[in-house]
Image (cartoon, rainbow, N blue to C red; front, side, top):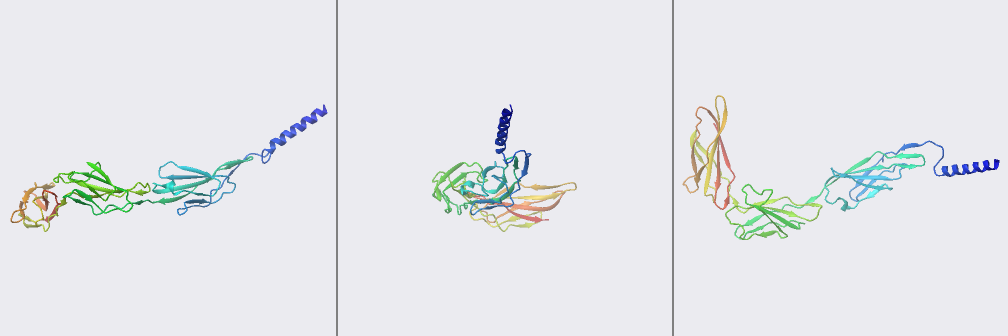
Length: 317
């Protein structure tokens, strides 16, 4: 009986020894140790290397990369540096945030709790193609041309006939690898056409250029040397504009009354350019009100040209 008891005790001792051997120690209570935050972090854009300070008792680190509101990208490493490939950031512009923390792990009865996060930012910029310069539309040949843009792989031409310029959805579009495009007799030569050209590249790390615009018609110059002779009745005069066929002239008045003040606009009057002198008589009477100022306005027109911008002469009374 004593022999059996002795054997049982030996077996139990062996089991306990084996069980305790699997831990750093046997019988001590469970404990948590909080890992310290890495004390340094930096990103070298030249070598594309992220570095941080080693954390005592750390076994592994997690690196998170975020750009604006994009999902985070995470990596893990046992080292205190991580080198990236430049291709990892192609097409990304803005502030890129790198964050590092030491990860939790367990040794024996001790759990090392993950560290606080340490972060650094890298502001990445992207180059852009230059805008095409010196756009010219030759009405005789129908060729649209511009200066070659360095590093451009192709050009996009949007065009339309809207008077207010190129809209967001053009009438038509063309693509060319040359610094010109031959439309030939595609347009009637009467309706003004507006063209917008952008330089483009397939490189996702380079922005396409901004638009350069031109019209198929030359814009008339705005009338100059505007003058007014008279008081409430008189003549509005101007110098002739080269190639102008006719002008539209009108005036705007600001008149105050006892209880209100209003702007009064006249109806545009057409004046042909072949008159002996360029003038328009206006009556700018006020009735029972008080006249404060009058803006005389004029714009030149011609077939085959864009109308001029509006020229204004203000007369204070």
